[in-house]
Structures are given as structure tokens and as C-alpha cells.
Amino acid sequence: MNPKTFKIKSFGCQMNVYDGDRMAELLTARGMSAAADGEDAELVVLNTCHIREKAAEKAYSDVGRLRREDGSKPLIALAGCVAQAEGAEARRRSPMIDIVVGPQAYHRLPEMVAEAVRGARPVDTDMPAISKFDAFPDRRRANPSSFLTVQEGCDKFCTYCVVPYTRGAEISRPLSDIVAEAHALVDGGAREIVLLGQNVNAWTDGDRGLAHLIRALARIDGLERIRYTTSHPADMTDELIAAHGEVEKLMPYLHLPVQSGSNRILKAMNRSHTVETYLATLEKMRAARPDVALSGDFIVGFPGETDEDFQATLNIVDAVRYASAYSFKYSARPGTPAATMEDQIPREIMDDRLQRLQARIDEHQLAFNRSKTGIDTKVLIERKGRHEGQMIGRSPWLQSVHIDTDAEPGDMLEVTLIAAGDRSMAGAVRQKVAA
Ligand code: SAM
Ligand code: SF4
Image (tube, rainbow, N blue to C red; front, side, top):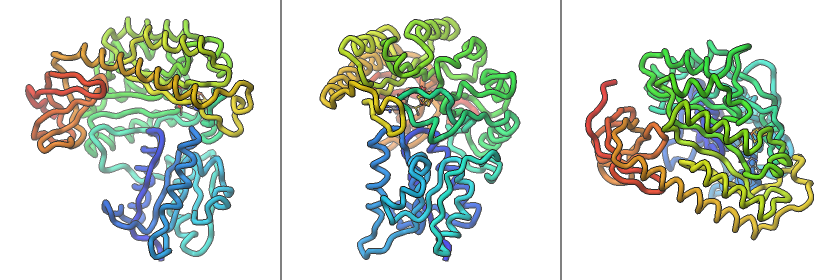
């Protein structure tokens, strides 16, 4: 019998969250319903991440934990990038897995569930030419801030990264499809749309780039905020930077990963930018939008990284004064060129560097938050806070803002930012902005 209830657990990047939502819509359209919190779902989809070893190992330990006390188990689908990378091998490692479905094939999930119920053990890790997006039902319910994938895959082949192998070559969705999905999201309650792509600023519709798409979306009534992530420094065009100064709905925030502050390491990583070209891009961005909040990604302990290289990374953090940033210990991924490079860095050194880097990033984040104290701004309410009567929303600079208010998710409030922490701000309501 086909399962009636499902649970989807997404790990890793925002694109997985988007994919997870779309799988839920597909299953719902076939008459299944999401299991309530705490309820034992009949189908569990683990939508996995392969970017670092820890994330990939987690997928297998999560599968093991799905065995119930009486020895039975739900139907288990392994989805996402671990499924793509391991294919049929995944079931050899864990025979509890019934379905293996890669990120470009999950539009076939309902049929694969039916096959599994009939006793088959389907595996689909194809990257077909026809787009999975065409197979989805129209979107209905949307979050106040909703993700919309516009670009997938990557042709850049940084030497540490699995994405070009798990997500395939760069593809862009057509402009008309994206605009139609954005309208559906706004009709379903979204007031902010976050455009997603592994290299979102590589989006193109022939001759036109992401700035054109953003300008097209900004014309949608009821859509108030536009963001995009993650960008690659090589695709940060002047046109896109100019849009930050001109399109009011485009939020003053840019996530632009640099990975390292050392040109020697950037070269070994096969990043196409240098520290100097990266900083020049940020300078242009600050000229176009002086209040922009800058964010980035860093990897510490890339093979061959010396103390001097690491110091250069701390230096770039100080030069940019990031409003926030993500930092990771280098994780050797099978099949990537960096995995077999000499001079792999010992774990203790990586731990120490990561701690020092994170402490430096935190200092700048706190300084950025403090610089916004006393400012009047708009906050889009997203969810309930931990305390009774407290709600959490986002400022234009993507800060989490905690507010005592009876407002609902989706409300836009005029707020004074009254206090700064290193991870969030406190705000006081001035008034609600009409929808
Ligand atoms: N395309 C984006 C770019 O080039 O900046 C980043 C997308 S990647 C999915 C997200 C982040 O994961 C990267 O920016 C990088 O910092 C981190 N990452 C990727 N591979 C990694 C690895 N092997 N070890 C540690 N961190 C890694
Ligand atoms: Fe990975 Fe980003 Fe490099 Fe592509 S550009 S290989 S996604 S880190």
C-alpha cells in the first residue's frame, strides 16, 4: 500500500530546503500528507548534503536511526547530493534505504515510491535534459520569505568542491518560468523572495544577466524584498552592482565567498579571483550601496595553508569588516583534486585556525550590529520567538530582529533597532506597514 504520510528532512544549503519544499508539494499533490510533529511518518525522505564529510556521514547515521523499536521501519528515500554521489552504492552501505534519488531526478519521486511499494528498489541519479521544474505543481502556500531556485550546477571546479559533480553543469531556468513562480509565491503569501543558485549571479537568459531578472521581479506588486545567494566573485557584473543602487526592493546585503585571503591558496583552489580583484568588487558595491551588509565563506586548512596564508585570511576579514560570514574546516572530498594534494593540514591546526577566524568574524558582526543600533527600519516578521509574545523577523541587512509584538508572520513593521547582540538585534515597533 502506498504510504499516506511523509516527512522530509533537508540538510545543507538553502537549495536543499527549496528542493525539500518542492518534493513535499509533489507528494501532497498525489494525496499524501505531511506527518504531524512527533508522528511516525510512513515515508521518510532524507534530503542530504555532500559538501563536507561530516554532512555526508550524518546521512547514514540518520538512516540507521529510522529503525523503530519493534524492528520495523518506514519507507526510506535517500535524496540530495549524497544520493547523487553514491547512487546504488548507498544501498550497499545501508540496505535500509529503499529509494535513491538525485537532485535532478526528484520530480520522479512519487513514481519511485510506487515502485518501491511494489518491491522494487529504484535508483535514479540521471541529470536529464528536460527540467525537473516542469513537472511541479503550481506553488500555493508560501513563507513570508520564500526561496526560488533560478540557477543550478556549477562549471567552476574549485579544487576542493563536489558541487560540479553532484549538481552537474550550470543551467539557468527561463525568465518567464521564474516570473510565473514568483507570482505564485506572492499570491501564496510571500513578501520576500530569495533567488537561489550555486552561482546565482551566473544566471543568464541568453544575453541578459541576474540584474535583468531582478528588475523584472521588482515589478511584481506585493513583492517587497528581493535577495539572492550564493554569488561567485567572477560573476559579479557592474550591471548587478548598479542594480543595488537603483532597485529599491533589492536588499542591501551581499553574500560573496572569498574562501581565503592568500592569493597562493586561491590559485591552488582554482578560484578565478585574487584578493585584489575581490576587494575591488566590494569597493564598487559599497560605492553603489554604501550601507550594504557584506557576508562571505571561508575555508581554513586547505592543503598547504601556512600560518602566513592563514594570517592573510584574518587580514581580509579585518579589511572587509563582514557583517556576518560562514567558515569551515577544509574537508577532503573523494574525487576532487585537492583530496590528493600534498601537505594536508592536521586537524588540531585546522581547529585552532577555525576558532581564531570565527572569533574575528564575531567581533566584526557585533560591530556591524552595534552600528545599526538606534536606526529606524523595516522588519519582515517570519516566525514566533522563544518567549511568549516575541516574534522574530529580518532587517534589510538580514539581521535577526527580536520584537515583542502581536504581529503575525508576513507582517512588515516599522521598527527601531534598540540593542545589538553578536547574532541578533532587539527591536521596538513604531508601526505596522500596510500590505
Ligand atoms: N558557489 C559558491 C562559491 O563559489 O562561493 C559556494 C557554494 S558551496 C556549496 C558553499 C560553501 O561550502 C563554499 O563557499 C565553501 O566555503 C564550502 N565548501 C565547499 N567545499 C568544501 C570543502 N571540501 N571543505 C570545506 N568547505 C567547503
Ligand atoms: Fe563549489 Fe562554488 Fe567553486 Fe562551484 S564555484 S566549485 S559551487 S565552491
